[in-house]
Image (cartoon, rainbow, N blue to C red):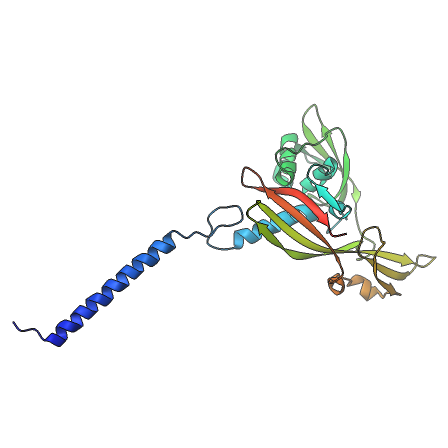
Amino acid sequence: MNIDKGYSSFVLKLMLVCTILILGSSIIFSFNSGYKMLNLNGSENNSSNDSNKLIDTLYSYVTYGRDLEPMYYFLKYKELTNDNFDELEKAKYAFQFVTEDDIFDKTDSSFKIAGNKYRSFIKEIFGESSEYVTDTSFVLYINKIFQNSIVNISYNQTQDYFLVERINGYSKDNNLQMFYTYYDGYNVNNEEDLINISEKVIFTEPIYTKDLNKMDSLNVYKDIRHTKLLDKIDNPSNALIDNFSIDDYLDNANTITYTFKKGSNGKYYFYKSVMEL
């Protein structure tokens, strides 16, 4: 049987193209099958959602309590490390993990948390080696379990539980805060297993008239000791006070960097914080 040479040539070319496509697909498949996106904890992930969630979680560790009570321990010092961090302050920040499921013997004015449970919260932020001196009580402003309340937290060593007792409610006189912050991004140092989160911060000082009926001026500072003045606003209006923000001072605001280090278990813990000043 005679076969048309043109047709034969076409078939050969078609077979060659198919072969190339198959080989190319195999190479691409082989490459892709070996590619895995990793999140910041080192686990496999096909998106950046887990990485963003981790950053949000770490940032919440150091900013807990600012919406109700100025827990600004991190903003008081030029440099803090896990070793020189006050243990009572560690216990305060650990309260952010407490949920209804963790408490027992709840009344209208108090509840209890198992000692090992509460200590695990401290370790969640500051690492497995973190210790807590349990013979000292502390006062904390909270906005969970007991809404907008001041509580006293003490430890019962005999029965190993923390007792949380409501002292009274809490409310602010106005919307002005003693400091204002702005999240300024993060970077990851994979070689040293570090995550750095940056934050801008300014501090305010209201100056009132002698009769305390009106705010005479509002001073804005770069530092908590009020030595580096950024701005002085005379006769600030109520609208300005209620809507005051850090936005107009970002270029000159102070910068604090929070550093978290990965532990042997793959989790990140607070390592240190450094203030620009």
